[in-house]
Image (cartoon, rainbow, N blue to C red; front, top):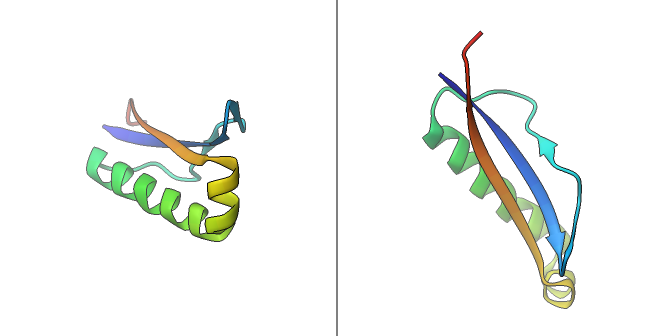
Length: 68
């Protein structure tokens, strides 16, 4: 089984279209830890002032797919 990571960047009630990670993961753990790390990196890129003023969040999901 493989997992697909999808990330969404939101502020207030507006969210970006989902971004699918460019590769699949062999475990849920790998997918989830990459999702958390990607969220932290993105928030750091935006900076504290922008994140605070826009109430920015990064949402992610790890969806199981059939291994092909």
